[in-house]
Amino acid sequence: MRISVFDMMKIGVGPSSSHTMGPWRAAERFLRELDTLGHFDAIRQVTIDLYGSLAKTGRGHGTGRAVIMGLRGENPVTCDVAQIPNLLTTTRADGFLNLAGRKSVPFQPDTDLVYHLDKTLPFHPNGIRFNALLDDQTTISRTYYSVGGGFVVSEREAEGIDEIDVTLPHPCDCAEDVQAHCTEHDFAIWEMVWENERVWRDDAEIRAGLLAIWEAMVSCIYRGCHTDGELPGGLEVQRRAPNMHRKLIGDADYDGRDSWLALIRARQYGFQEVVKWISCFALAVNEENAAFGRVVTAPTNGAAGVLPAVLMYYVAFYDATDEDILRFLLVAGEIGSLFKKGATISAALGGCQAEIGVSSAMAAAALTECLGGSAGQALMAAEIAMEHHLGLTCDPIGGLVQIPCIERNAMGAMKAVTAANLALVSIPQHAKVSLDMVIKTMWQTALDMNDKYKETSEGGLAFHIPVNVIEC
Image (tube, rainbow, N blue to C red):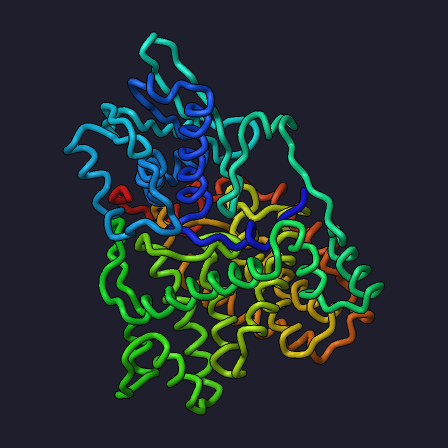
């Protein structure tokens, strides 16, 4: 499987890439397929069945809202996120759903969206089945799997049918491949990835796409630093980033995001303040994510704060340019793809090591190369970051991406910075553990991990702190 950087980092809507973005995109695919088959105008009713982890934590993750948004034809990149929190209420009141903005059908979330808590489909814990009743009383059903990071696999694709692949000039299935290409061609990792990206896009598109990702990241940080209030879902979690931000920024005047960033860059900070800024950046993103804000999967929504926090640290405190930002994102995307190919980026398969752990590895490698490290040192930084996330469970209280998820992003960001600093003063050839070895270990750990620690809210903190969740 060949994976683009733009597959690993996608602009979307919180709170979960696997439970929100995946079902959203699956709903879009279902309607496109019905349209292609010529059945769209004959749809009389649509029902949805959720299985496995999608059923067990779907209410807390906003899966119902995501499915409705997808069926309505809303684009997660551009939609008005302010309408999402009240979507279930308004849909219940209306009793109808306007499919792709073209056809209105009766719809009631309480009966037409079914959470099968005791059933899991065979291919992946995140299974979703769409059913369309047509005018002639026949039903067309399609099954999809949300496999993490917003990636969606159809049942046919899961069975090895309809596979699509491309040929890259420097194909990489493991870290050893990355090192070999960089050594042979005297590449930095970002240079190798750029050449691969040219298979999908021209240089101008690559540049514009990556800067759009950074734009979404920094905008999310800014919103999160300036939005007070309580997060939805019933846990009564208060946003902390705004208060933390006020203490750091002080009485300074600024008139928008750009002047705010310029102000941060112009100041001198001590160690403790820098640490607090990194944590603030991470909290800001994931508080936005928990509130159905627009974020970037990196590689998932639950871990969306790690990479922006570390990149913002680099931009704010190292005077990074747009070119530096491009390089950072290219390296991060490549490292994320290695974990997707060799293990998983789905918490429903691998626990939180597959989310926070992978995001921390992505950020560590990117920061290392951007601070002058070699390809070997960047790969070493990714290994260090993941090694100290191995076995991390996914146990969101009430199925909400809030506790412990938001704080874990701050911890993952700090581990990434530490890993980069360790790698920059190390000799990769002396390392006893390779990135490929740690990816293999992560996958074996995922297989050994009890399912209750894989995004089911049936173990860990979720078990010991039961709550009544308000459906998101």
